[in-house]
Image (cartoon, rainbow, N blue to C red; front, side):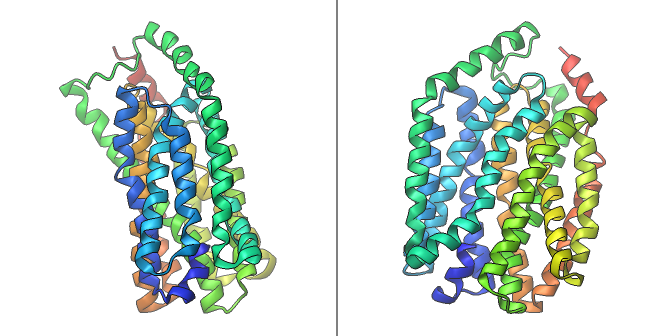
Length: 375
């Protein structure tokens, strides 16, 4: 939403808007698996408050951007903070979840998705108070959260010991040892498929967040408030989807929820340009619920596929795969510049179709159980 305000001020093209999103996402997607490896090998719980602070600093300085290059640097800084935070944070969320790992990861993920959903509302409010430089209000919010996390690092660290002891009894201790060569194909193939699926989902997610407000402001000439309302409805519905997706996966299986989500995205994306009024709000809400419902589910599936490399698995999904959503926004920006915003939504339908085909080949509950039973 910040980009919708900055675009006319800095005279950005739609392609440049996409590149700014790419700068943010690539700074976290490329680096985050590295932080995940460090998380698996060393005690780095201090990255949780540090990452939170850096992410807030990057967002806080965007409103002070005198030019396009400064805006890109701010996006890079915020992305680096996200990269530092997520692998360590999601690892400890898994430790705290017990047997219901998808439900626990949903509760952890809902915090980030709720903050993401509140973004357009806060941006609109902060800009009303102080103009573009109102982004600085994000800094004290993140600083307070970082201090709270720092004050509770000891209790967060204690979760790891509680998780390791029963895992060690089952031979599942996170020892950091590599996989046997013979088992590499059976692990690498589903992990690669899962990464590709999350990329497809991210292209839909970030594509809607980036170009839904652009479509209604610059194409349909609606107000910024109306566009912000649509984005907020989408994101807040995603919070509910996050809460529902985890328990559903614990009950019916990770793969079942992923397949259902991908299949449901296709008709909703098709209908976006053909509804208005209350039906549009309902459609946006349902789309947000469905798209984000697998956010925590895919993280847990990656961790189940790589139980000895939980930090790396988390960084791979939360960072690399989700971060590559920026590639999708850049592609969609190019489509918008050449064929208009209507073509953006038509192009976007391709992504869940590909995701659904990939999801069919992911391991189901029985296959995962057989993996865990192997020595």
